[in-house]
Length: 169
Image 1 (cartoon, rainbow, N blue to C red):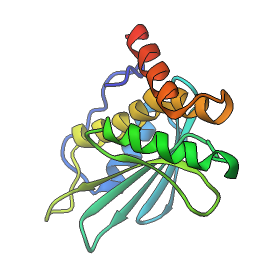
Image 2 (cartoon, helix red, strand yellow):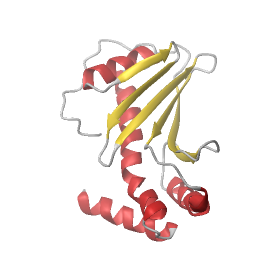
Image 3 (cartoon, one colour):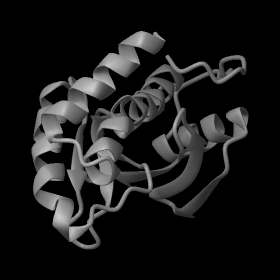
């Protein structure tokens, strides 16, 4: 889990996904806004940058989709290398995956949670999902920067990023 420097949030029971996420963000002091009944956006500080987190609730499917955006745009001349790196990064992941939006070339982390028939989300699952999104973005942010701005090959970038991450642990 990510060390936020704050005590864990105390919530008595499970809650509707957007309510739980709003409570989680508020308790941690993270900026957030409910843009509709089924969507929330917020900002969470990471190790490398501040991430924009979007949560979208699909009631009909009982699925909560989390998108974490590290404010990285992939220029056209780097897309091939970025896609190659993204494929290697996704092989390393157990939950979620990275993607590059076709409109605008924005890099993002995406994870969908099946909430269940009751449509309720526990605090522990909400906190784990948000912290996992930020942790994965922090883990691979340097690799994407190495490819996009450091002119490293995807393999070199991933190796350098994983060595750096292991050295800091």
